[in-house]
Amino acid sequence: MTTDQWFYELFRRFPDQLFRLAGLHFEGRWRMESVTVKTTEKRIDALLFRLDAPDVFVFVEFQGWSDPAIYWRLYREITTWYESRPAGESPFVAVVVFLDPGLDPGDPPLEPRPPNRFLKLCLADGLRALKEDPGPLVVFRPLVVEDLDAARREAPEWVRTLRALNLPAADVTFLIGHLADILIRRFKELSLEEVKAMIELVPLDETRAGREAFALVREEGRRIGRLQTLESLLGLPESSVEALSRLTPEALDRRIDELMRRLRSGLQ
Image (cartoon, rainbow, N blue to C red; front, side, top):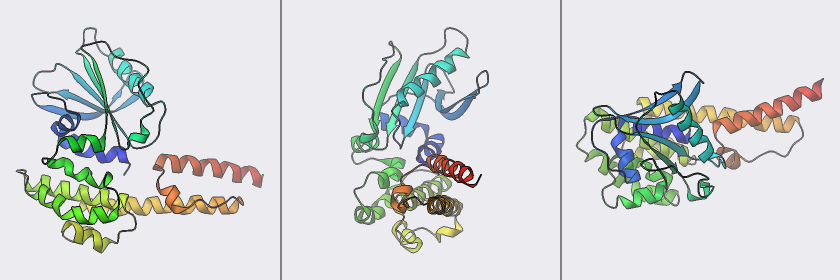
């Protein structure tokens, strides 16, 4: 699961929590979807729209990796959407949520004309603004704590917060599973038994979230192993597991494809 998907899966189920994180105040019933503009086949990762009284579109980018062109990409998605819609559509709000402040390339090159709006925020800042009432957003705390020791200290409180929510049991189970997934991906040195103990979960490998999390971790391990093997075959310095673990699956695949091309070229 990529970092983008961590955000998408939760906000698809709880779109109101995105507005809380971003400090936006919208009423009504909302839905978040990933949509494709058919005329161009351009995909928009996260678009929120009001179901009961459409009056504004909210475009969101969840940024967990460095992309100097993030703002241009977001504007392209917005203009592509409006290009495919009738004239006189509702205004938009564009939101970029950065996992880390160091990922922000700076001020956007363009500013939308009111009533259209643009805003950006760092995940840690958004969580701090909620103070003592993080609600379902507490599942993102593992992404912003300083280290594993802090995660171990705070994890019981995260779980208590989730269990205390006035939500259906299925939603609480989903949130705790989401928390487990993020812990596993953020702190790869954790054993499965430690994760289960930290979040007081039923045997993690018996839950759907747990099975999916473990499958994704194993898949990442296969990617890293294949990449290191290709580096060895080409006589290149072997990249560390730690460094490779910070790359997105897409970046790992691009590097593997590049090394495969070099290997094939050398065999011809």
